[in-house]
Length: 149
Image (cartoon, rainbow, N blue to C red):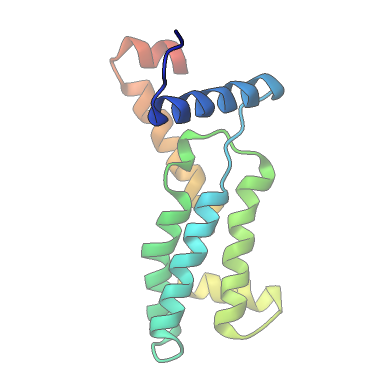
């Protein structure tokens, strides 16, 4: 007499075997930022779709900085990222500025970013990583000290 497994048990088992298989095939732990990129594009397109060219560039950038950049960086400070993963959000922001100011000149884009006080996501990410490290160092939890230090 064989045991019947429920659909939730089957999905859990297949999910478990997928993750075990990925961990066996990989030599390093790697986080994927594909979901964060998709969510960023979705929210930025929603802002451009609703606001469009009606609002000033300053207002559009404030909306993007408060809504979209936080979506892009959410939880990434806890993940070990490759150099390409860190630089790709900067590329996304540069392309967004190119679309906003209607230019392909990177020097103009960097000048506009400086004028609007817009930090690159890699700068914000490094600040968040330092804050997380400081929290771990100041934590009195023994498990946090064993894992991090």
